[in-house]
Structure formats: C-alpha cells, structure tokens
Image (cartoon, rainbow, N blue to C red; front, side, top):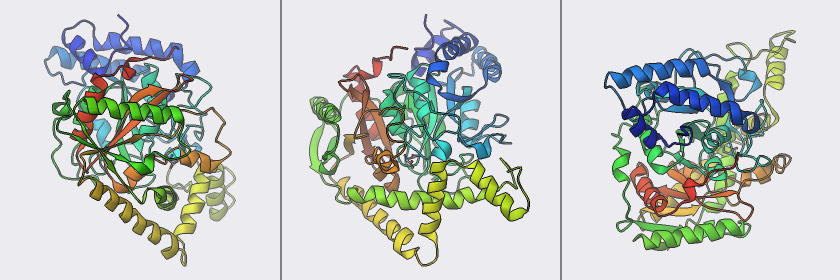
Length: 485
Ligand code: GLN
C-alpha cells in the first residue's frame, strides 16, 4: 500500500483497524520526502527523529484507546508558527537561528490530539509575497511543473501536500497566503474567520489580518484540522469566545438550502480565460446540486488592493520593529555602536521585499501622512466590509476564482512587485473583511496547471463553506488528480 498518498480521514480508518502503525506511516512519508524533496524544496527544516518519536507516542495512544481523528497523522507546519525546540525562521536571515521556547497554541492542540510534525515548511520571508521566491532559503517548486512557483506565502505548505510529502499542513493567510498557493498546487486551503483560530505563537505580519488555517488533500481533511485548531484562546486577545462546531457535520452532498452569490467585480478583464471557464463550469455544477445562484455586487472591490498595501505594511512596520539585534535573532557582527548595530542588523537581516514593506508602512504611519494614508485606508476597509454584509443578505456564500491566473514561472514577476501583488486581488478583500474563505480545486489550465475556486461566507459561517465545498468536491474529480513527480 502507498501510504503517503492517503488522505487524513482514510489514514485514520486504517490506523484504527491497525492496517499499519503510525511509525510505519511516518517512515513511508520520510521516504517520500527523501525522494521528491530535492526537486520540490517544500521544507526549510525537517525533524525526522522527532517525527518518529511522536509516531511511537501516537501508536501508544492508539493502543491505549485514546485515538483522535488526528492521532498519528504526519503534518507540515509553516515556518512562521512557533515550535518549541525547533528552529523557526520565518524564512528570514534575521531569524535564522531563532529557537522558540514555547509552542504556538494551535501546535499545542495538534500535538495533544496526537498529530506528528515532519518539519517546517518554506514560505516567503515574514509571509510577504505570493511565490516563495522571497524566502531567504530559496524558492519551493510547484509539484505540477517544477519550473513554476507553488504560490505564496504558504508555498511550502501547499507544495508539501500536493507532492504527498505530508498528509496535511498549516499555513497562514494575511492577504491570500493559504488560498492562492492551495489553488496553484491543486489542494484545498481554508482561511478561517479572523479570531476563529488562535494567533498565539504565530509570528506577526499584519495583526488585524493574519489567520492560521489548514491545507489538505480534500475538504473532509480540512474540517478535521479545523476541529482541532478552532476555538477561543485567552492568550490571544483577538480570538473570539464562540464555541466551534463539529465541522464534519456540515459535509453534506446537497446544496438545496444554499444561495450562492456571484459578484460581477470578480469576473474582470485580465483574468485568464481558462480560469474564467473553470469558474463558470463550477457555478453550473453548484446549480445542478440544487444551489440557488444570484448575481451580486461588491462595489468597493477595486480599492481592496491599495487598502491592503497600506494597512498590511503599516502593521508589518510596527511588528517588525522588534528585530533589532538585541533581544534575539541575527545581530550584525559590524556593531561599532548601538545605532550602527541596529542599522546593519536590519540592513543585513531583512530581504528586499520586507524592507520595501517596512518603508511603505513607516511612511504611511508617519506624522502628517497618517490621516491621508492609514486612516483613509481604514475607512475604505469599512466600506469593503459593508459590501460583504450587504451581499450576505442576499446569499449564504460568495463564489469567485481564487486567483486571476494559474501558477506563473519562477522569476516571471519577481522584478515587478505590482504584478506580484495583483495575484492576490481576489483573496485580499476576505482578509480586510475578516470573513472565512476556502479554495478548492476546480479544473486545470490548457498547460496542465491546477485552477482553484474561492468560496467566501459570513463571519464564523465556516460550516457553509464546508457544505458548499464538500458537495462540489463529491461530484467532481479534480481533487483526486496527482502531479507526476
Ligand atoms: N501576497 C500577499 C502579500 O504579499 C499576501 C501574503 C499573505 O497572505 N501572508 O502581502
């Protein structure tokens, strides 16, 4: 049996039946990693010994009858999520040697459920980017075509799932960083409602936007990871104290009770024709499953990108002020005095895109410009949020393409930041509004690259996402296709 190709729910049933042990499963995944990782480069750090220890622990849990749906399941964790005792770099030179002394809340929960960590997944430095090309450790490759990028910033997390180098992974999404790489790699990616999953132990980028979420091989697996990840955490003041439901209870094969809104602002000029065709076909499939389709409008959509590129860099410039060479992380050896030490540490420690964001953000927050930029952007953010509130009076979920194009070539957009920013034009509004959104596979381009469909819902209505995504997935086969590695 090829164990690494299994989904989490399939694996759970087989572990339960004792068809194989968690240790055998982990060994099989480590072999798979050995084989394909030199080509894919999904991981920054691998922790094989720790994984095997955790697997043996999981086997003991299983034999004691303490099994949960995640017991013995090997996962990849984006390298922006703190892991006690394992280097957490954020794909930056400035944190190259940073060893967290605590686990992020989410990781603690996964561990308590018996999940196994195989390693830390590659990403764009500090999650700024859409391709993983901003990683200090070099880019990951898209398993469907090794000359293209896997998306970003959670590109390593997505590539690891697509290449069967783990059974599922955690990513983070500030402006699309779970959904866009999920799309490019042909896997499922969910950004939960802001406040649904604890950010404690997540290295901050844009604190009012960041969320941790799952990347998986199918929708059922995403529900299983959400069941453990979601919930209130007193250690994160923005986490919300609302009970999380059992997300698997929404996995139904009908859409008879669902109204789907299709916003005209997302089917615009410049969108790749293959993407448009796939999204149109998906809408027809939803209709055949009983969904009521309505046309809606989100009139402030065109402002989302400029608003995001003021708010996210502003928050980043404040969050990244802590990397000064004093408390932890990289310190320049050329530290003649305190001021030159700060300057050199930050000049040498941060990459180009991170520096660009810090400069943009510092400018937008500076005296005399705050009202014109940050404050104005925050006001327009409210208009974008209100667009969604109005739309959700007419529908339960909103359906759009996840990204305007399929994956692009390595190097294609790296010299043109604006082109790079545009690949998140459809995912950013969801972060600004704080609503949940999922991306699921819905087709392939003529050149054989995966295409994804985005579904968005009201705050805390992840259940509607799971129902819509699951019903669609059950009647299509896109999620079953595998890259040829
Ligand atoms: N690509 C967007 C950016 O560069 C979003 C990143 C993210 O969601 N972390 O900011």
